Image (cartoon, rainbow, N blue to C red):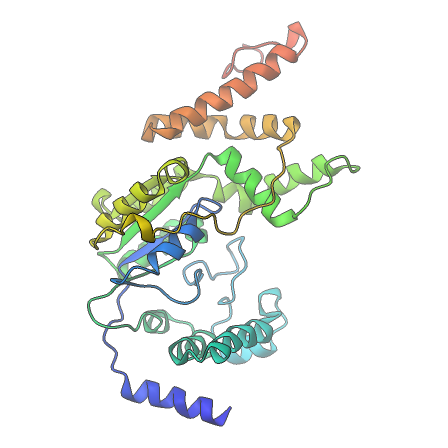
Length: 333
């Protein structure tokens, strides 16, 4: 490792810090084509993004229901701490370093050493964006969509001119995609399996990730609308080149030629039909949220609301006559 350390020192001494600003953050939503967006933006000649997609700096507090490698500020705590977020730290570090060594990518190695071995604070975070002057820089961490108001205010204090990208997906589909991705192959006829899925859906982590109205309220209270880009997963599926072009314009860089756009899906969940019981459960859960989104944004949210209403109405029609009620009506009225 001595040669590696010497080269790391040379990089630190010879390469000036040209740029340590962050121009944009992708904040979600999870399972809404953020990996696709990362793969495309990092290929743009005028954009620099870290070799690691999700940095999880602003949601590093254990108070958030998302795991983070950055919860322990100091290296010794990460190496020897017994907290759950410290488990596997060495393995993650070795895996990240090995990729750079195998590819002989010294810049990647330098970044990986800085990422894993630094003291986690605001200056350290800025140091992760060292790049040539003139590049637009940013990162994408979907968990930033669950940040509380004080943490988003801190983001604004660090980067007042930051541009924020949020891609929304029908919360019913997004949640089911997350279930499939996290659980792998589901055996839906197993004992109590549907109850386990419902419990997963109601986990605080899931509840926050699907609360788009909360996300919009918090981030729009800290950043003006001209610094917010709200896109839709539906549009990416139908016309990815157009969406990517709009994002490039938002970031102030040239639009990608169509033949350079990565159209394949990234981090795809296993294909498995949603059970009607879960579909109904999610439609009930998200119906109030979809009403608010439709009033707030319209567009694809209108179709999401209509789909939810169709699911609920179909369930009502299958129910006993005495249980029938119009969608949105409160029991007992």
